[in-house]
Image 1 (spheres, helix red, strand yellow):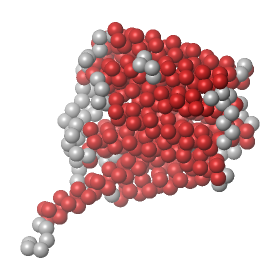
Image 2 (spheres, one colour; image 1 turned 135 degrees about the vertical axis):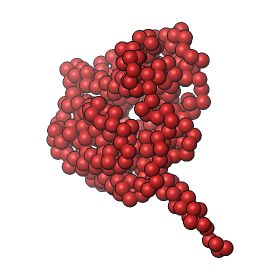
Image 3 (cartoon, one colour; image 1 turned 30 degrees about the horizontal axis):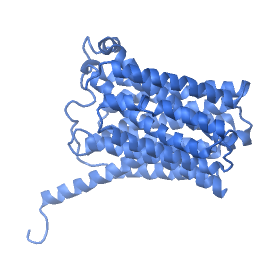
Image 4 (tube, helix red, strand yellow; image 1 turned 120 degrees about the vertical axis):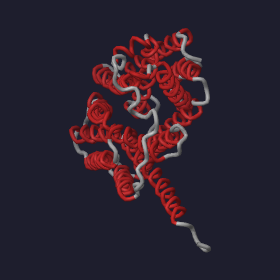
Length: 415
């Protein structure tokens, strides 16, 4: 053929185009789930006022998302690696995300908001594993590096854009409690259609050493893995737990803290603050991958990061300084990314191959439980004061972070 491509060349070009398209739609799918996770944050004070919710009710709504993720991980988490056509998991998960967003857009009661968050968590949990495996299958053969980068960027974009949509809706007064979720429904629908109709026709073989590696055998039990890793596993899990406690508290009670203790009158602005915090956390994750994991975790806990951030927050509230609070958010964002990457990488390094999957599952279960700690803060707020709840959070998390940072330096992790 003098003026065109051969049949093989055309086939390869079409396959390459199809793979690029599916990577984009998978990224959009992940982004839609995380949009649904973060969009409600700036709206919580408005919902609390309109629906006369207690602080406990508000934090229960926030914690329902983590419950949904855990339900999904336990229910379908292990299926993703065994399913040949992952569309059968990704598309239903996107529909669950869409229904969760629809419920939130229509919510006029505690029950509807609780169910909306629960469904958002179920959809995210089911989608995350399946979409990540699909990214590896259809991405370049680089050990999953590009897949991990796409997933991180998608998560960061989704988490950051959610509060921005809500902030704009609050400031403009344009259907503040529904407009952000209509956008999320549109994104989820586009992603679902793209996954259904742009899925590559060629079956991609599972990479060697994929998700099923190391399963089975006498040493594959969780107990065997915990014996092999000793206290190092719980040190990593504890660091991520405290990190997520602080992050969850920023998202769950942060809007009320900004309004009542820092005097931030424009609720929409807090959406932009949260977006910046989450973008810093995402950038920190990407940059922290270049550091040895042990130092990343140590710097996140000790190196004037997580412990310092809560001290800065406490001082900002004491002197009513929004500028100092903003500095605390920047430090906390860096700490979140550094601790997340450092602890997750170290768990991967120290986990025996036979029990690796089970240890990773437990690691994230412990982390997601941190999302329920704000419920205890809600009890303190309802029965005492917001100030006392914030002080307890600051004191406990600062002491825990310093202690964990010291333990990390002495734990003898792989260098």
